[in-house]
Image 1 (cartoon, rainbow, N blue to C red):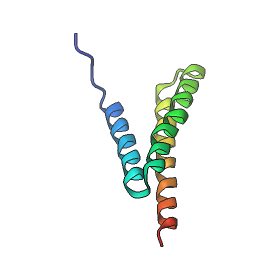
Image 2 (cartoon, one colour):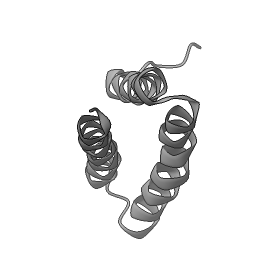
Image 3 (cartoon, rainbow, N blue to C red):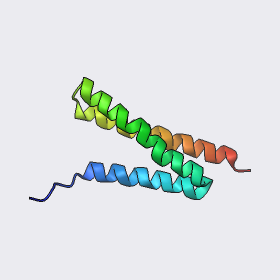
Image 4 (cartoon, helix red, strand yellow):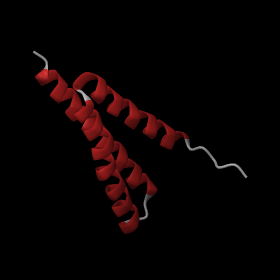
Length: 84
């Protein structure tokens, strides 16, 4: 039996990887690492907490995408203000 591929999870992983890659290319190794590992340290516990307390997959999805969107917005603001 082959595992089922979930499109939403794949899109989320690709968006996360793209954000970390963009941070690496535009701002360097440290920014890429922060986006990659830092988000891991935020998203995984937040997802687990939401699922443990509510069991609501839709809410967990909102938390994951919200954290990723907030991080992307923060990176965009930081990149726009650090460019001279």
